[in-house]
Image (cartoon, rainbow, N blue to C red; front, side, top):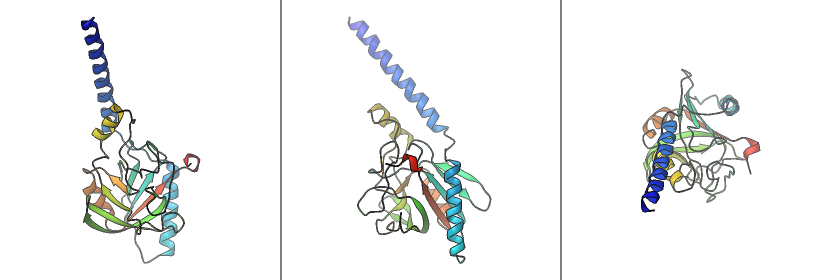
Length: 212
């Protein structure tokens, strides 16, 4: 009886380890996923903003597709001069949803993500280390970004180990969540900040049918 129970436990443990290994491999080789609709809308919004502000220049554009689950590399960072595109994971606000971001707000203390176009204003070192301050450029959707202290920063909860822990503990394959900021992996923040710090814009998008 004891031997049978041990065999069952061992089988279950090996099954879990196999599942986690397969999941970790998939996450490690994630090539990124941002919809063409999000890309197109971001470029239209940026073009409209630059037309109205000819004194400004855009060097890079980050497109965040909140219709994708948080374990996916759902932020596309585009070098507007070369066309080169890189992908990164990014967290959403804790009150915007769990695996998916479904609710959005520009209200202070809402702890939700906001949609629309943001302009990067400056880099700084804060509680989360190297970070970027942002201005919301859409008065209806993200105009309170600076007042809400919505920034781009790094966080340990945006990582493959954190996703795997959430799977084991029953939360599903999700990253941790922010207070509404764009939180990226710690090992990516230097690269992301370098690309966005001078002439960078961020566009956060979600499919209307996904919002609640």
